[in-house]
Length: 407
Image (cartoon, rainbow, N blue to C red; front, top):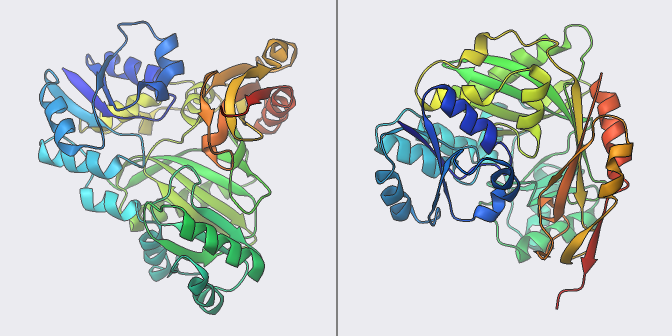
């Protein structure tokens, strides 16, 4: 029997393949670009999984590829981009999977915000905004400043602008007008406080908080993720408060099964949603969950794909492993990546530091203002998330991408 993955996050294929094998299944990845998974495929045994090259943006091509998969038992998707097509295909093929309508709702950040506002789970609603100068009046009138502008179907922090004054608002609207959006532009209130994400697992209305991840973003108006650490130790009953809150948020958003990566701001009045992603966290989040919790959390993904309650919901997890922090290393300008200075010195730093390349020498980096400019990640461990983050940052400072001008 085979479990197919319609694309995947860049990291986690090995864990996913192991989880499938533990249930007696083989993992088959359908992808339109193997280079996305270069690190995983280079480090895995050649027979760890099957890889099928197919245009994953072509629904008919994907249908034909799935029809050729031997004894297809389930379909996994861990991306935002292919979540709606994957849900539709699973329903079409009679495979276990989420309600396609619920997935469509979760892919529309504006609709999610409106739904939460209607149920009293958000202090403000979302307002549709036309990109370009004509959108300024709508933002000022309905939301005020500071505000956040977003692409309703954006991914990887693309199409997100924080605006604190009218000058910044006009600049952001002009940028939004010049770049293609996956959805539609909208505005919502700026939330004051530190950014976190709740990493959760749900099954038929029951949600378990696996832990809270700290997140640091760039200081620029364009949001770019820089640092993360897990698990955050919360005081008193704050963890229980967040677990109850995120359960209500996911219920209103229609998410009833599987992982969710729920970004939130811990404001002075409590948690406020940033966005919901119906998947395991990206970058190295899945890896640090496995290590810190002392179990392969991807078994839950396989259980869900097979239509059964994930065993992870009932597995004791507290205090199983160390804490972890990781830092995204960005190129400082567009150009051709030639390599990195400083990788040979990482072993001198405390925390069993590891390097995870995202790009490879020879690649052209056209964008450095968002996650597309990330060339690799530095991972470190420690007794607490705070110490792990400090260790990862100190080591990452040593790594410098070498960029040459584009020919």
